Length: 329
Ligand code: ACO
Image 1 (cartoon, helix red, strand yellow):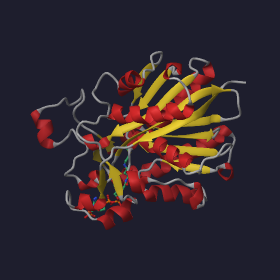
Image 2: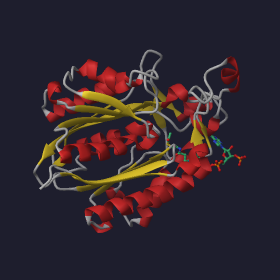
Image 3: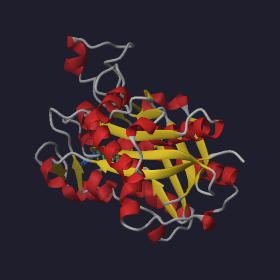
């Protein structure tokens, strides 16, 4: 029997500063009522000038390691899903490695936008099953506030900063990641991107003047694709695991918009207690969204040993994915 990747510790970190919808009313032409009714969000955490993605990732990782009761030297691999690394290189994962003294690990970042944590989990499942790694730290961390155009009301009300982490360890128990499904639809790269600041359009005076170094998004189109993509991913991951909607104890969807989540819940005929939602407090934290929610769900007693958890996400790319996990702690 091949080894399973079991989650043995989770943790989260969010910056202290909170930006409310009322605060946003002072920055762009918007209203608390519009934001709440169109997105479900009330407030989000925003990193200060000194805080980078790896700082939040480190804080979340330390909590996950403490809960897992492992020594940092046991970690074989650190994967950080992020689109806002501290700098183009080295990776945020390398900064985390140094901070937590995981001296035996390999470390790299994974760029799959909001799906980064699930893509990382998918990779880890394979690495553990093959015996290439025993203990893996998967982090989702982003500071989207740093690449947000604070004059664009279409995007700036949506995002928050944060990090979530999970320690996965090889087990022969009947617990862990049962299946994953990942997929990308690259015909839609134009729907959500940061057009400049990379090798296509490097930084220049013109870039700064045109504000093309910030997030540009066709929200409506992303919305439609998100619903379809996450439904497809959930169905595929459950099929791989040989499970049905009725078997699911809890769904943690990417926290991007309450209306997207409600649409998925309706299709799966899930009662409210089987869907975890915390976007009202955090906004969309990109790759951090799912591990933050997972940490809060466990702390709130909504995830118990033996539960079947489904996580699903979508993001720029467009990337999408889902995982089915038999909770083992
Ligand atoms: N306050 C007030 N009005 C606003 C705001 C705002 N903050 N933002 C947009 N509007 C206006 C628009 O200008 C538009 O006005 P108009 O009709 O006069 O042109 C109107 O509201 C409706 O705009 P829509 O885009 O149709 O609004 P929609 O109902 O689609 O909601 C939203 C917009 C919230 C962005 C939604 O489409 C959405 O959540 N999409 C998914 C986005 C997402 O999840 N992106 C993250 C992907 S993850 C990643 O990889 C980072």
